[in-house]
Image (cartoon, rainbow, N blue to C red; front, side, top):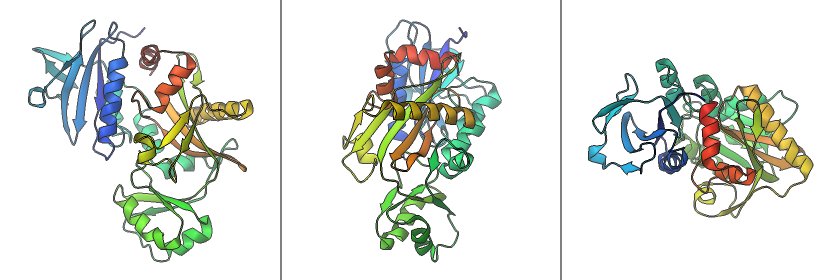
Length: 338
C-alpha cells in the first residue's frame, strides 16, 4: 500500500461544467476512506484555489465558509489548514472540463511530482479533444467511428453546411471538440439549422466537429486498473426521452439508465473487451469511461471520459454498485493504483 496521508480532491473548473464538477467532487470526497486518509476538498476555478472543506481521519467533515477558506500555495501544492501547513500527498482530480480534463492540471501536478488520479497530461489532452481521440482510433479494427468534419473558429464556413450534408447526411451532430455534459451540442435535422448549431458550438470552444448521427442503442462502460490488470465494469444502457443524451437528460431526469444493460451476452462481452482495448491503446490510467452506439452496422465509438461524473446518481457509481463493490473500496483501488 502506498503511504499517502492527505488526499486533495480537486473540483470546480473554468468551464460550463463547474457546478457538476462540484457535485462530483463532493461525492467523491465523501466516499474516500476516512479511516485511511485525511481528505481535503479543493475548489479551483479561474486560478483561485482554496480549501472548501476537510475531513481528518476518523473525524467528521468540516465545511469552511467562503471567507475563511485557506488559499492553496501553487508553488508546492500546500495549504495552511487549522494552523498546520498541509502538503497534499495525492490529488484526486474531479474537474470536468478545463483545466482538469484537458491535461493542464495533470501537467501542473506532474511538474511538482505530485501523484494524481487518472491519465497523464498528454493522454488527457488527446482524449479530451473528440477529433484527436477519434483520430487515434480510426484505423483500429475492433470499433467503428462515425464520419465527421472538423472546423476551427475563424475558418471560413461558406458552403460548409452543404458539404457537411453531402458527406454526413442528416441528421448530424454539431458539437465542440473539447466540451462535456452536452454543452454546445445540437442535433441538426435540417440544413437551415446548421449555421446556428455552429455558432452555438463555438460559444463553448474554439474547435468543433460535425458528426454523422448513428442510430442505435446508447451504451457505456468504464475501465480501471486494479494493480494487476485492466478491469471493465458492468455496461449501462442509456434510454433518453429527449432527442439525445443532452444536459436535461443527464441531470434533470429525462433519461433512464439500465444497469447492467439488458443486452445479449455477446454484445456485453464485446463492449467490455473493446473498452479495455481502447484504454490500453490510448495509454489511459485510473478510471475512464467509454461511450458507444450499438447499431445494425456494428459498435460505434462516441467518446472517452477520463473524468466521468461521480455524483451518487452518476453512471460510474451505478456500475460500481452493480459489480458488488462499495464506492470506498473502489476508490481505494483507484488511488492505490493510479
